[in-house]
Image (cartoon, rainbow, N blue to C red; front, side, top):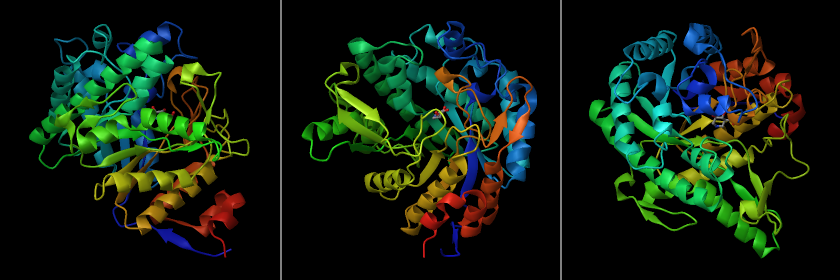
Length: 444
Ligand code: IFM
């Protein structure tokens, strides 16, 4: 075993990511509130982490005290524009206070403008299915960026457009809950509209703030074919990989959105990103399955020997993060990359320390090739409302007692604090927090 410390470039961004509906609480004017009221989620968000009630302050104290220098949060469209003809200046003022509070604590905010939740009035007009959403989104973005530009120049237009479209229209787990063939067509329309809205927002933000850095966050799933000798597995892998991952990246590179249902020209989006936001969690194995027509005759799963999270939602496959970064660099040479999410659900902090250490080591490998990775955001700072799965999955460095709002410090807090403060990771840290992977990570 070698004693060593690996270091990151000066100014590397170290932080956590959260999203408005998942942490704010009392969001009662959006599509997710409706979904929860319909009983379509395991639990309700309720007070969530009570950030709207002001507990963001204590959580930002926690972030700052543990060495984090940035935080990715999202703002809630339905609060800022509660009805199509009204802006809520008080809501904007609260967000201004939040961002100011981050600045005062030495934390640079990365602001996401859309993270899964839509105002109810937009939901009633079929959300992102109609092209009319594009100017509406641009208007909201202009209002929000004008109000908040004093505190940041780092923006993320839309979080995981692929997850929004596929879960909301193909799997049916997210609002609108549509699925089937009709749903597939709608998902494509939603993605095209999200691309156009991204382009409109990108241009608007740069008009308002010259020095802005604008991107979006892609949920990227590397995939491998289950059996190397089986051509049908390879075929299914390619279909799933393209269908799930490629709509946004290809459109931004070429101006054409590729989809299993045909290509759509969106020339206005080509080249409009200042960084690539990459959300990486795990790698899927894909197998041809004649008996699974619902998923287009494929099955995605984790191998039997995988290092699995508490509810088996995530497998700890750190090399997949390196592969994702390599894909990003090949696709967009020279474009800065920010890891906008990476994390694991784990109430007992059994797997998180090794997941964290091993993934950060993979980021370091990438940095050593001079790939322009600029930051890492852990999902998440604190347990929060996990969409249709409610409170069943605990992604926080800090745990949350939903009843009492008490925060519970998990050992990973201290590991991440040491990493952020050192701007690096040492064999000593791994020995202390994840000794089971020490030899693997620092052999010799
Ligand atoms: O909680 C989500 C987040 O909202 C989007 N990316 C994945 C996370 C974990 O499932």
